[in-house]
Length: 538
Image (cartoon, rainbow, N blue to C red):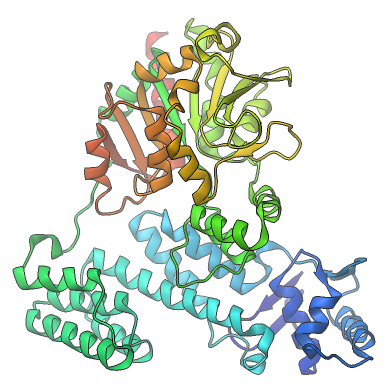
């Protein structure tokens, strides 16, 4: 088993023993392959990175020799020769930078205390500045800047999470030390102001704003941004919202699970199932997305489509969109026998996912499903298609006449409101970039394209949103096109592991109760409630 550490001087281990990689050229080749692990790196790109625009005539031979030496040190199967170049085979967790980014992404949706632990673990992967022995290599500059940005962001995230829990005496000096190294990061300045204010140091908090203003004006000729100005005004007014944030959602009440179970077992619950993971960080890493910008999937996708084209974007999305079901997917796949036994209709499940994990869960359970997916491109753009259980596909041209083909009396229906990434299907089409979402916004007839029977079910059901943040603007756009009447007519619930401060108010405006709970334990508790209810009826 190979392990690689680049968050500091390059370290390589093989079966737990250190491996010496002598020579800067071999190290450079190894790093170039590591940055594209499990992907073919063309020989021309390696030569250009190592020798620039005018490589010597012996460059190709020197590259082959360097790869040959690396094979001796790492094992003959570690680096594979392909017609176009080379590929380094390494498990997902074999590189410390990959572990760091995964932990950072996992922390975003984790409960508060778990988020702090994940961020600490992520930062624990860092030993010092990445790859100091190669720090001046031109080919590495973009990656070093990206990693440095993520490192500071992780430190900011950790301090912000700790501030939510309460002011720690160490936070202020830590923030001051970070600001000394990054004087123009307004987020750090704002966190310092907040930490000082919550430490009953209002005057120091206001002085911190003036320090930020002088640094920005003197160095860059800029005034503080609107966020920092609003925080300054809030401190002057001593607004109550500046105190330690209280939880924005309650844990499930004693009546919550029985209420949800009752809605489910009366055939009046529509579950809206979120993705098992956030694809934006992985896509951002693949396409070298500028780290100073917010990492949102539509924005990253727009960046990739603009610079590289939709083909490479869709290829990457397919490679990242895993079809492995989660516990949430498997829970809903376990319900059809219960519903049939009670003589109830099957489920209508809604998702904005792109992968096939939900369908795979039903296939593993031996259950057939019908899929209704939005078509974002092609001659039938703006309509939905029906992917039947027998593998056939049909465009839904007249939604009002398309009822018998999609009866919930027969099978579960999965409504994919952003389409699906599936290269094996002629019906692959999905909304992902900002342009795609803007086109979706312009089409006021999206809800009218849903088959009439499913539209009626959506209007007369409770909703259970699992893992969706209402801050996700593209989610709000998509669901706003399907659930056209807000607030919702029937009592509904949203379940999030770690809601943001304003989630509760935004969900309440939509007529939805926000519940704070990790998703897998939540569905386990809901499954137990269903079993207890069935035993009581027996």
